[in-house]
Length: 210
Image (tube, rainbow, N blue to C red):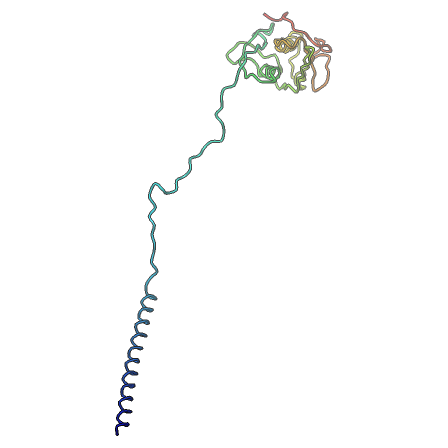
């Protein structure tokens, strides 16, 4: 009877421990399940970073890559145009940029004609273009004009002379030039309108000047 009673006590104790473990286990499972469902239902946290106003990006200022233009050196040249009667040459002084090819630049100014506010008349026919210019070391300068120097010329002895000497006198103002050889379309010409011999270089003359 003592043995049986002992066995019964052991059985009761084991049963009680089992029940307690079962209850404890269920509680742990329920606790973990609740925590899992809680985290699953929560929204992911949102992190917001406030950027101070002074650290925000600003548009970079536009910087021009072109250097500031400085006024270049200029020179006064003398251009020979016809008077209002078409009988003689008069001088107009003009300020132009001082460039390396000053003779070319000066003839191009002559081709443009006199200032609008003057009474002078142009001596170069409309449409004429300076094709080339070549300064030699012996004082000779060769000028090559387009065909309009001949085809658009008004003709006449005086007009032809004024055209020739307006070019010659304008070019010989430079100390390295003393005579001018005329070409038209790259070819030597005998005359412009049949009155002046242009087969030879022409020196300056003030016969039609002031």
